[in-house]
Amino acid sequence: MTHKPDDFLSRAIELPDDLIGFQAEAMERGWGDGLPLIPPTPARVAWMLAGTDRPASEVLLSVPPLFNDCTIEKLAITAVMAGCLPGYMPVLIAAIEAVAEPRFSLLTMQATTHPCGPMVLVNGPIAAHLGLHGGTGALGPGWRANATIGRAVRLVLQNIGGAYPGKGDMSSQGSPAKYSFCFAENEAASPWPAYHVSCGFQPEESVVTVHSAEAPNEINDHVATDARTLFMTFCETIASMGKNNAYSRMAHYFVGVSPEHARIFARDGFSREDVQRYLYERARIPYGLWRTAGMYRANEAKGVSPLAHWLSAADDRLGVPMSESPREIHIVVVGGEGRHSAWMPSNSSSQPVSRLVTRANGSAWTAP
Image (tube, rainbow, N blue to C red):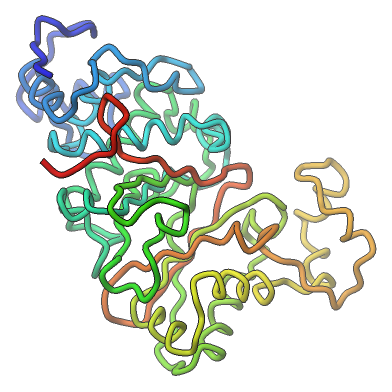
C-alpha cells in the first residue's frame, strides 16, 4: 500500500526540522522521554508507513487514560520519533493490539504508582529478520530494533494516551523499563521449544508477547552445577515480600533464564513445564514471615488484593507462593554466556498477551 503525505489524517504542525530545535519544542509540548527524537516530517512518516499494508486510518486502540485513538498513521509518526525502521511496523502493530486486550489491563499499568513498563518479547522468524537481539546484552543497550521498538510502544502510551510522568503516569519512582523494554528470545541457545510454541503457536509463526513488568532483577549463580542447587538460588531470589507477586493472587511473572542455566536444568531432566512447577512449589515465603508485612495488613483491612480463602487457616510453616499456579510463571531463554539470569516481577492486575504478527488480510507474516 502506497501512503502519500497528502493523504494523512493527522493535523500538521510547523516545527523546526533540525534536531536541536525540534527536541526543544517536543519536550516543551510533552512529546518526549528526554532522549533525542527524530522529527516526523510527512516524508519520513510516508517512509515508515511503507512498512505495513494496513490502512493509515485504521484505529488500533483508544489509549487510556485520555482514550485518544492510536491509528496506524499515529503509530508510524511515533515510530519515526523513536528511531524505528519501516520493517518494524508489523511488530509494533502486534504489540499495540496486544496491549489493547482487556486482560492486559492497560489503564492500570498507565496510572499505577508501581514501577512497571510495557515489556515486549518477540519470537519467531521476524526477530532475526529485523535484527531483534536475544543474546549477550539483550536486555540492555546496543540493539537498534530492541531499543526503538520498545521506545515506540512506550511513546504511544505517553503521547497518545497521556501517561506523562506525574500526570497520567503516577509511578512513584519510575523505572528504566519505561524507556524501552523489548527483546527477543534466544531460541537458538534454548534447550526447550521456543516460548511462543509453549503458548500454542507454530515454530514458523512470528509472535509478539507483551506484559506489564518491572525492569529485570538479577539471579546470579556462577557456582551451581546441578539443577537442585541452582533452583535454590532462583527460588530464594524470587520469593520476595517487596513485590506485588507476593500479595496478589493473579500476578504473572517472567523468568529470563540464561543459556548456561537453562542447559543445567535441561541436562538434569527439567522441561520448561518442570521449571514452572518447581518455582511455583519452592519459591515461597513462610506464612509466619509473610503476614508480618504491611501489604498483608493492607489486604486484610482494605481488600487491596483479596487473598485466597485457604490462607485463613494457615500456620506459620505454610509457604505462600508467588503466583496462583505454575501457568503464571513464564520461562524465556535470553542472554549470552555467563551465569546471570533474571526475573521480571509484574504489576498485579496484568496478564501477558501474545499476538500473531499478521498482514492486513489476517494472514501470518512471512519474510519478504
